[in-house]
Length: 222
Ligand SMILES: [Zn+2]
Ligand SMILES: [Zn+2]
Image 1 (cartoon, protein in one colour):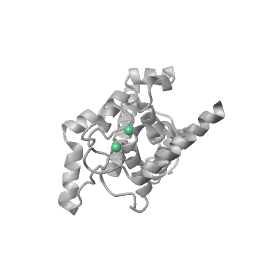
Image 2 (cartoon, protein in one colour):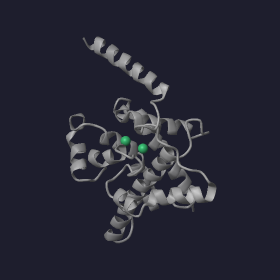
Image 3 (tube, protein in one colour):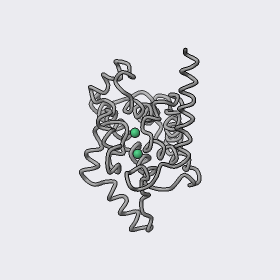
Image 4 (cartoon, protein in one colour):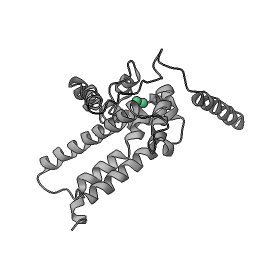
């Protein structure tokens, strides 16, 4: 049978269940890195299906704090839909079980964790600051490495644990080398880097919109 609800209950010795749970936690981090890297390095705003996601990444590199100014639903919904899709696909492929459910539940929170990594301590409740202190979710300091220069490292956005390993083995550069060797396609230049390009006009227009709405909020409060 494809779907057996009893498979949603972890079974077996505790150390095996714990080991699998840690594996799922790191897999969520790895999947977040793969998706983030592919959107940062390939395609463009006009690429069919994923162009809108790439546009959000371009905006995020130009305006990293924008993610804290939109609603939680706007920030979190992309990873919620991706996680639901992975759960559906995994079920069809015969991976239904507690591990797949955990993957979906953790995965749904990737962009929320990312938003917290761009928030100041004053903007976060104490329990999120505790999760940062315990290094159970990615910390602002760790995520800031991705937004530094040259902005082509530390793509995983859920924990602090996988990025150093992937950078050590030069995973992303190796993947880019393989893609270039097999297809001739080279990564996209990041126009948020100094000297590479200018801020796109649509981002400047968005800045104006946000300034106007902030002013309107301010005058409504007074
Ligand atoms: Zn990025
Ligand atoms: Zn970020």
